[in-house]
Length: 408
Image 1 (tube, helix red, strand yellow):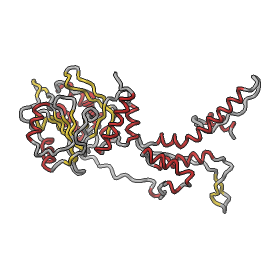
Image 2: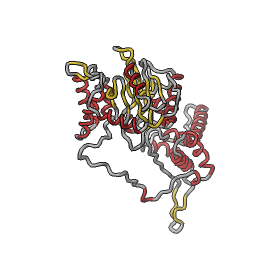
Image 3: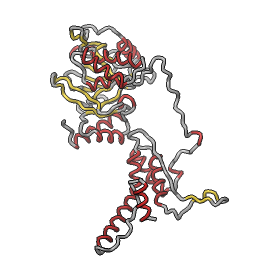
Image 4: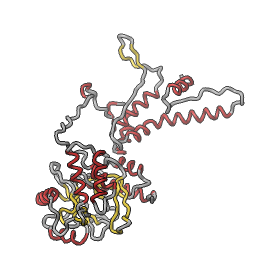
């Protein structure tokens, strides 16, 4: 498996961040490989599960983290469609259809693909409009990607002449709604492969409709996937790649089953406590300036860095310091503080906590180096002094007992 060079990976990450920002979309790493049977075709394999259900990301730091996690396999960026929809044109017939419908297709962001004459036309649709994927139903060589779909971002190889995405006019929305719900094949392309098999023009739609039917019956994605694999192998000629079948299955995860009770609105279980938002002004400047600046520079939630800095400061204080919890009863409390950061992948929990703990690790390393120098100068039979600890990574009772014994 060929992987990108560090320079190519940096370029891919920068391009993915730029696309996410310009289009306001979520992205994820994909691997594009040529089809051995057809040099004009390629398999497009998403490298993460659940890309259609929240696993795709849009934050620059999260994008970099996700793409570097899959650095050995990623070759391109995948764009999740939905609010941004894409017309995928391939071949001369698709080009002819495009030219015949220019009145319905306002100028917009258009990106050339790898296939001869291939183009991606990007349009923005209102939040209350849900357009689903369609393959070969509009016209020969014209596919459509909407909710539950994705396209490969070719803009790094073929920069668009226009970056701005146009709003889809009402006429185009109505046309795509009719095309995606139509059961009739487009003129000039029945999508058949012969002998009762489903050909290239209808494979995605054939499997997508079956996945939709099964989901409405209450089947889960994991139950739908093997059914589609079997149908793909038995009915489609040539069969789709397994990763495309997986993508079709996952794209139906949000479909509500018939008779299934909808999930209630989320309930904030902490709301009754009325805890105020942790803001920089809640802490003294000596403790808030760095975490606030770090959060602003990285684009992450400052609550993560502020709480981590507060916990690090509490850990650095000796237990000789006591907080007067209630002077009337003599209740004194040592500054022991536990914090819990909850957030989706890419929210910046790990980098924020590492940056706030860096001063403690610096002290830890300095004391550890001094201890090793002292030990190196001792006689062979001399007793070693207690080893200083500022940070512990092993929280088992045995390891903590040893660390606390030497560091009262």
